Length: 309
Ligand code: PLP
Image 1 (cartoon, rainbow, N blue to C red):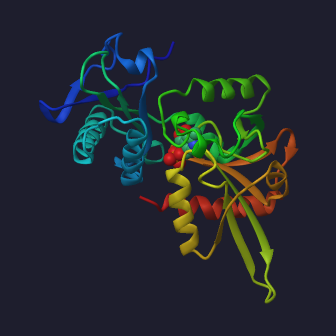
Image 2 (cartoon, protein in one colour; image 1 turned 90 degrees about the vertical axis):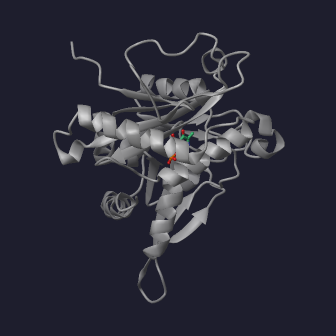
């Protein structure tokens, strides 16, 4: 049996300026922590490559936004930055990378509402190696099924207490959707709204591309994502890639998108911080895009995304 992957754990604790290191192999949370009893909390998942966390500011800003949505008072960004640096350095000191290609760490930030009756949130940073499966799917691509999320695309605005734009700890539904896909032989999911709009993946943002010839014969490349106000999590990867693609001459678009737009696209991807850009091969069994165009666009966008810090 293989041993569990090493994990470094650092709690944010006012008594320790760089965070309090704890043993991830030992119990560390009280059973009355509201993160455990109610899933009441928020998180971020980031990727560190060669010891540097990618898009750290965007993740810290989104964490702050999630905290505002939940009325959670969380530690300041400087406190997070110190704990993150300490956790990544400690992990790399204890587990020197065997090769540069695999030097990818998942850095998770978690904040719960804290222990029942206590005034302070529980907050920690966790560092672990990135799994090989995600890296593989960047190369092989993924098969996806469409699943109804059961909300319409206006609900986020109408019912902010559903916390749809916040990255809350309540991911049981997202994980159930992934298990449902796996049982059907698919790798991932694209959620649709009850009014027929394309939303997001359970842990990723949907992107599609069209390539057209302009009147003067040059190729016009368009990168499109669902409307950000349709009850989806604003992806830090989508935001960063859009900025890089725009600088490289791509046109950008924001939904609304319907499933047929995915089927008509030259390429579709799911993008997220750890798996990065995963090309979609099939949706509900139907082939997506044209292989040669898809390959070229994936290589170009992956190159642009890899350049982002
Ligand atoms: N949408 C959901 C629901 C997610 O959970 C995630 C990331 O986990 C994303 C989108 C992609 O966000 P990011 O690119 O910031 O990783």
